Image (cartoon, one colour):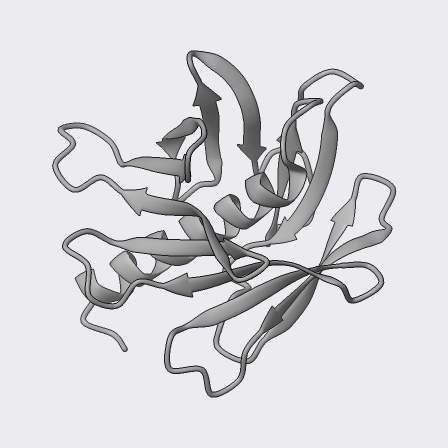
Length: 173
């Protein structure tokens, strides 16, 4: 696990579905972010809110896209995209591209929730199931000075894109 300067959160595995809401807890068990799954949304949308209910980020699945992609908006403006790279040889690879800003690369074992996010080679976020004894939970640790909300939403996006791909491989809805 990263050192004490990093902020660590607990998320539930495979928690996102249309209309489902859930809390993201910090390492003290406090509910610090809420994910509001928009019921009956045609665009597979969810909103990240702070603990007081203020909207921080809105996420939508990009339906007409060559590669699996989710867009992230901040204050009704495109903020970032999370894209699964299609043609990788040995393992999946995701890019988190901030509009007019840095690109982050996620690599590792996404189905087991054991991966890292890097920017310019620097470790920014680490995701691991091993940090929690609860079977259906995984941890997201974010380095100081980085956008906590973006990294959490990116982890949820990667989880959702990976889950959608698994359902397609099994021919499930």
